[in-house]
Each structure stands twice: as structure tokens, then as C-alpha cells.
Length: 366
Ligand SMILES: *Cc1c(COP(=O)(O)O)cnc(C)c1O
Image (cartoon, rainbow, N blue to C red):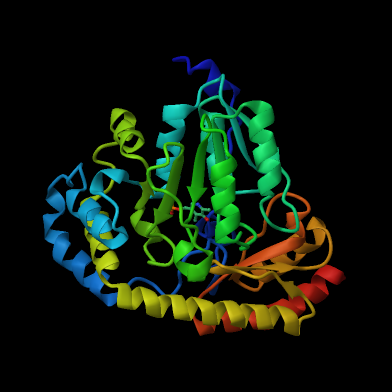
């Protein structure tokens, strides 16, 4: 057998996410409500579908590896120079490229215990050492993260704000102070996958030239393009230029570039979608309360619901929901795993959740 690296041999054969399609295939029946993967069930703008249709016949061409038009459009949108944007195969893909630039077996990396697992997966894939700081009151513990960075002399610290899986968000000033307090030898990876769903006053105002800060955004969530696999980072020009050393230059498809360009241009639709998301969040929270459960405040496109008991109970609720064809996920680590996490979706899907939840709770209690 050709020999893999020692590192590859040491890694567990993980399946980080069990996709709803895998469950559907295994049991031979489709879900009626797809509310588990934080997708945006309201879908992309009609103008995006038109752009995809127009770009279709061009698919024989390689895409623009410099993503020139999109970087220009992002530059106009954010009023930040185009050389401060890196585009890639979603935030997930970009996190992998970033780890390739910064992580080897001598690198220390800090994140939250129970936080976004894809980041941990990339760190492990390059041999880094992870330090995981427990959440505090269902929020990432900023003081704890900072202390861990100092203690381990970490090169990277990762924070999802708004947070996945809890949906909570720190104030703008808390994030600004955290960025300021961080040693300059540590890169702050600020994952803002849900930022369009957040209240404007919560969005931190950070210097985009700060040499140790990179912010990530995506077209997967509020823009409704998870299947297109396209996201972007905003950072200092020299860090952004470094991505060119190792990135997959043709990795963002021609159709994905066209879709993202059209999505960015249709801010009216984005505003409407965000209103639908806010309404759906309120609806999910009400369903939770109607069943005696506690919804956590959310600044994302999902609501995390405290089921009030341990992980065993939430897992039983989840299983019964799945048996009733409602796909929902939950945080993986205690004490967060006392919760289930319900993504927003159209009214019919939320109605299916509302209908299934009482029986799920009865079954879990029995
Ligand atoms: C959904 C999610 C992502 C994935 O973004 P893609 O652009 O689809 O790869 C990244 N980070 C967080 C915190 C997420 O919840």
C-alpha cells in the first residue's frame, strides 16, 4: 500500500456531518421538514436564478481564478479595497486554506469547546494542537479565550460571532475590545457566517487593516446559496495575498461566481429574506415556549432551544422528530447538548415542527 503521512495515519476516520440525505437513504424515506443544517429554506433571489440560467451555457469555460468581478463588487459593497478579499469554496474551504498557511505540528490554536467543528477538523488535519475553552452562559467566553491564547502562546484563535451552535452574539464593543487585547502574534479568525441576520448595532467595527484579523462571510446562509459553496475573507492585503501560494485557484465554479455576483447586487431581496428569517425565529421561539421549553436569543438563521435536561433527553427529542420526518440537529458537547437547534424555514416546515414537537417531548419523557 502507498504510505500516507504519519499525520494522516494518526487521524480518526471521521464523518464530521451526517447529511440529511444520508439519513434519508438509510431509512428509505424523505424528511418533510429540513430544519437541521442552518440552510436558508427561503431560497435565493429570483434574480440569482436568472443569473444562473444565463451563465449555464458558459459552463464549458474555466472560471476566472482571480474572481475579479466579485472582488470588485465586494469592494464596492463594503468600501474596502479589492485586494483585501479572498474568495473560496465557502468559509469551510477558506478555513482549510488558512490552516494550511498557519498550522503545523508546532502550532497552538484556541477555540470554544463545542464550537464550530469544521475549524477543529482542519486544525487536526494539519497537525495543530487545539485548546478548547468552555462556553459561559451559552456564549463564547471571550476572557477565557484570551487567557488560553496567552497561556498557550497560540497562533490562531477562532470565534464564531454570531455563534453556531448557540445562536448568541457578543456586543460590538466586546468584540472590539477582544481584538484589541489579543497579542499581535495571534491571528483572530472571526467567523461571521450569520452576520446578515444580526441586528446592525451588534456588528463590530474593526480596523480592516489590523494585521492579525481576518473576518469570514458567506453566501450560504442569508443569501440562500449553500449549494454553491462560495464565501469570502476580509483581511490585510499581505495576508490575503498569501492565500495565492496554496489555494485552489479554479476552486470556485463559474456558476457559483455568477450566483454570488447576482446575490450581492440584490440587496432588496436580502433585506426581505432577513425579515422572513426574523419572523421565523420568533415563530420557532413561540413553538418552544408553547411546549414549555426555553428558546435562546438568536442573531442567526436558527433558534437553539433549551430542552431543560441532559444530552440524553435532547437526543431522544431529536430522534422522535426524525421519526416524524422532521430533520433538526443539536450541539454535540455538554452542557450545550441539553439543546436542540432548529433552522428557519417556510411556514409549512415550521408547522411540521410544531406538530411533531409535543409527541417528541412525550416520547423523550417516557
Ligand atoms: C454554516 C457555517 C459555516 C459554513 O459556511 P460555508 O460558507 O457554507 O462553508 C461556517 N461557519 C459557521 C459558524 C457556520 O455556521
